Amino acid sequence: QVQLVESGGGLVQAGGSLRLSCAASGRAFSSSTMGWFRQAPGKEREFVAAIRWYGGNTYYADSVKGRFTISRDTAKNTVYLGMNSLKPEDTALYYCAAADGVYTGSSLSKANTYNYWGQGTQVTVSS
Image (tube, rainbow, N blue to C red; front, side, top):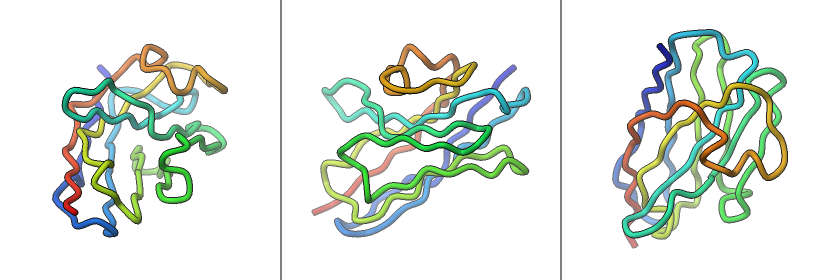
């Protein structure tokens, strides 16, 4: 059974940094695409970033490009989201997700591409 467990969220001032972690277990992820999404109160879940487990190709939403970095540690089966220059509008519940298969283009940003989801970790950025 695939399990994704996020950690690392918290309260930070605008301009600060956080690093989220997603520990993945239950199977091998070498042929998977891993993603981070976020959902703010009253808003739809939105794509943040994605990474191919094999090869490490990365993809970002325009709103976080240059500020966030997605990476993975294959030995630890963990995906990270480094977040710098945080803004109040980054406040949301952040979810880790895993998709069976390798995806590119617009498929990466669609929540229904992903088969497995974590419970989320809250990030709050104060102004």
